[in-house]
Length: 266
Length: 291
Image (cartoon, rainbow over all chains, first blue to last red):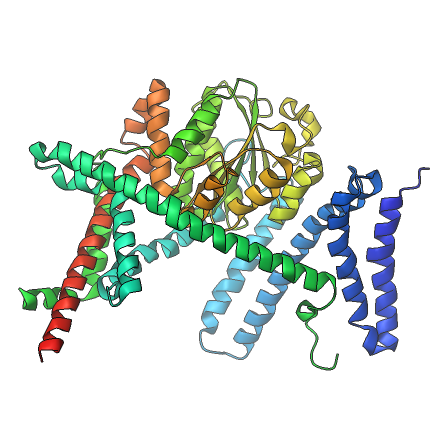
């Protein structure tokens, strides 16, 4: 049997150390925050170090870093489970206490349990959650297509109405910044669509000029999007990346511990 | 006139809602057929896919939900049509939790019905949904079967000819992501920047401004920005493949080109509202200054 250094190290770091930590934490509460910080330190460090140590046990196909990525997919699935537990708990409390809007919580929980139940049924019965071999819908797929998709589209479509209403009432050139925004927004709104051609449609002699003007607007739009917008977006993205990197370093070094959810004195 | 303007601005907003409904629904029901001009980023995307050879493999990810389907569906459909027409093989995934897989299933069913010669598992495959977008992408860089051990129906990937020789996402010629939210950006940062696979993105119009930075830095092959980008792509597809022109001209079904008619009328109304609102605002300000 081959000795798999990567696997043994991962098991030691992410299974044995946490178990020991839980056991010690029961005896000494002060240790409760130490072990998670240690686990976070190694979870953050291994992917970084693997970039610099091209050894099989680190970055090979079954090395520590790819294995951590695999675990991350599993942990992400557990995050969904945590979310479901939270929804169940919050809405159950709302119903029991008859808080304002509790009937909506009943609808939400019914939707969650029925849809989730049909999904689990699809997995257990091996019929899946898509279409059956004869092309008909599974119950889960039916709910997805005829309930979920319609509801989500409807909710999002409402935005168009509120945006139009807000544009009438709120989009004003109140100061220099608002005026610049208004002009840029106006050019982009007009330049992204063939508005001038549409307006000139009833007047054939005006159509060539409208098409030329529309092309000019289109070019102005692309310039706005490429140059001022592109530059601003680059700045935002680089700033956010640097912020993310510094936060990651803080978490790895145990300076940032907010994610542990500990109260004062823990 | 000023009185009329103020009365218009004090209009019950339900009239504005009605106007919005008519301006969007009218042109979709009765298409106007307004012209579409092609932007550089869409042209680059189209040219890149046109240059692919039969048998090449590309990755199509459905990273959006029903809320943005009118924008993203036409992009994914056009991309899939172009690939199947050119005999480019397609691997389909969905990384968006709120309905991405359902839309992928429906789109595949619609488009593959147009190409009866295209065989599942040979010309295209649906790997289904997996949670944890960035983690999945990182895993795809090492081993596809580690992230997706089976296809959407639970059959092992080794059963499918399309997956033979396809170990990681390095082996595909292109990733096309029709995306809403952050997942599109992850394909650039996790897959293009770290693995090197070229990426084309089809974001919603509201997300598109962000991706100009990635186009400028050369990290994206191209972009289909919102419904306009999808309409541009439909136009290029109709020009490049005349057999598809009649499909996109037909009055059946929704296309981005039809959607652009509605969007044009709506943009016109909103711009008119903004202009009228500002005229009233300046009149009011002048009146106050005089007083």
